[in-house]
Every structure is written in C-alpha cells, then in structure tokens.
Amino acid sequence: MLQNGKTLSMHSNSVYKGDCSHNGTLLKLHENAYTIGYSALLSPDGSSAGKVKFGDGVWYDANQKNNKVYVGAPTVADAVPVFAGIMVREPGIASGYPVLNDEVADFQKDMLAKEGYIVYKEAYVGSTYTEKKNLFNNASVTLGTNMYVRELDGTVYFASAKVDNDDALVGKVVEFNPDDESVTVYINPAFVA
Image (cartoon, rainbow, N blue to C red; front, side, top):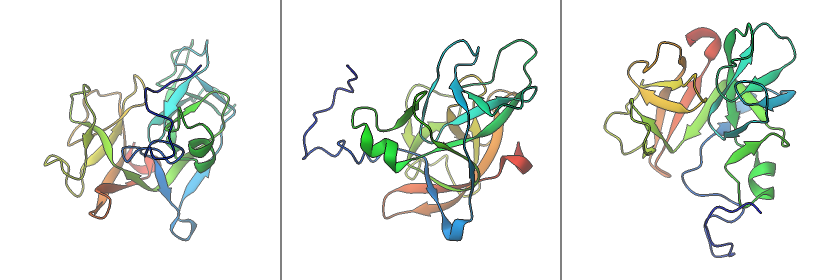
C-alpha cells in the first residue's frame, strides 16, 4: 500500500489538491505552451520503470526515435542524453491519487513541457541538495536566475551557474507572485540548453 505519512482527512490540505509546495503548474496563456507526450517513463539504465516529481525534468536518448523518457540522463549502451522537457502538473493525476499526488509513476501518462511558463514554489537552490527551499523568499533567487535540470536524476535547481557541466540550462525566473509566494519560470530548452 502506498503511504505518504499524511492524514487522509477532508480537512487536510494534502488530500486531493496537494500541498502548497507542489511544483510544475503550466500556465497556458492563450496556449503559449508546447507540450507533448511520451511512450515510456524509465530509469536511467532503462531496465526498470521510472518515477518523477511534477516540475522536474526528463531526458531522451537521441539515438532512439521512440519518445521514451528517462528519469536522469540515459545510461544505456551508446546513449546520447538530450534534455526532453519538464513534467508538468496534471490535474487528473494530482486529484486521482491522493497519497502520491505530486509525482508521476510509470503507469501514468503526463505531458512534457517543451516551452512555456511554469510555476514553482519549492526547489533546490545552488549546489546543496539536502532541502528544498521556498523560492519566493530566498535571497539567492531573483529575476533572471537560471533554472537547471540535473543530469543525474532530473531534479530542478536554481543557481547562477551549473553545478555539473552535464546539467541542462532550461529556463529563467521571469516573475515573482506574492499572492501564493511562487515564482514563474519561462522554459525553452531548444535555445538555452
């Protein structure tokens, strides 16, 4: 049985609608967004199913033309890792699985954002991956701060420079939202990766 340690009560903020820390909401401003699907969600070695949080990134193997995505850069034989997109929040998944409503499992199908404006509330900042921090209240995150995706596991982090040369620069902070203490990031990996 899947558990997250939270009380399943109609009075809980976590039930069905998710916590305020959940990321990956795609702003469809007059459909100024480009999303596509994928055929399989796999671990980096391709031997097992993958699982990714909303708002994190996934990778393609450029040698394959099968739309399979990997949670982290693919390590299969002769793989050429290429950033695929950001796994954006899917209301059907978020509302249908109250225990795991902030991630996508291999049996679910979500959408990858290739371009668009995505809302983030918490993420890693800089090179420390011990605790996600609120981006709105973090002094290191300002307009124009870069958003990177780790090649290792697809995790998103915000910093002025890459922590690892193989990480992908995919977007920049373009707006601060005081109403819900979030930031809006414009992603376009075709030009910045």
